[in-house]
Length: 380
Image 1: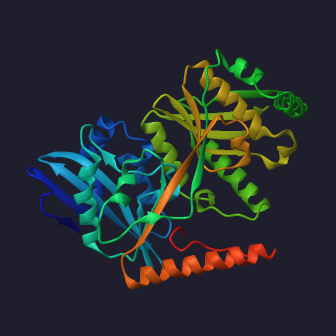
Image 2: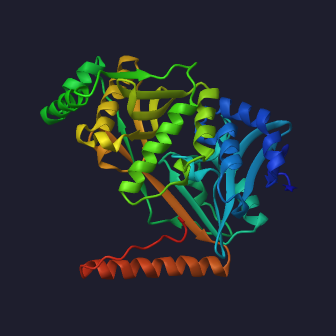
Image 3: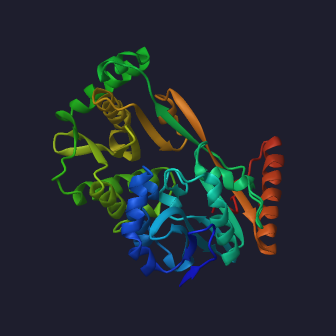
């Protein structure tokens, strides 16, 4: 169903969309807005559509897209969805599981304050208990929603994530590597030498005409092996899962994909699925063969694609969301990705209160040397 709301301003109309067929119809208007706004891929129509078509457990998801129109022109989008887990329905970003930076999409010249009636229309549409908006950069347009008076009061949520980047004025990739610590340079040389004992080592960018399927199947297999060893899970890499090929295919269609491989003879020992936007390299998925862990092939590949990026004049290498140590090792700057949460219904208030109580209990246990894992209500 598609809902229309009253005009937000003279000549402007708000539309709330939850029908998948309407999402597909929006492609031309959404694409124009995305290009005009210089939006990140995570807010592109192709990305949201790829997520929707491949999302596991889609029966527990509903679209809740908020659109602002001026005549025939689409000028703003809040790309949202509702996820049900148990009895709790949470309003969140569409494709949030696969999007490192989340935000609204707004046409140039539109003031962020003009998102307010769009946000009010989303809240009035109902059908959810909690709001959880995460992975917001400090300059995200959606940061202003928390400051606006509304029926759901958004507060900073305790869960934050880190974003590490490499930026500097090195004249070349080799100069960047030479600027690293002696230990890093030694580890790089030793790692290469160790792998080369098994065959010739080659770093390369996958060609635009090379098939993606074999490489992505290998990526998923390597990830499953790594996840199993570390006791973790991710449905993005399940055997036969459609999401990863769909998202990477989206990057290739948009001309953003940069897929790097580190090969030992015919075998791939590390892969980094990257993209280039706004003159910066962004690392979306990186993995390596854990059978070669001693040589740190993931670190070797990172060094190689950072040097590659510098040699081609890119201003920055962005490791996207996550505070892992291997990212911190090379970073020259960092940002905090914030999140906000709020309750709309009594059940939502109860869920947030239970979450706060569990966090207090966890802190109490930690003080006594017995930490207990706690699941975040809004973030699940």
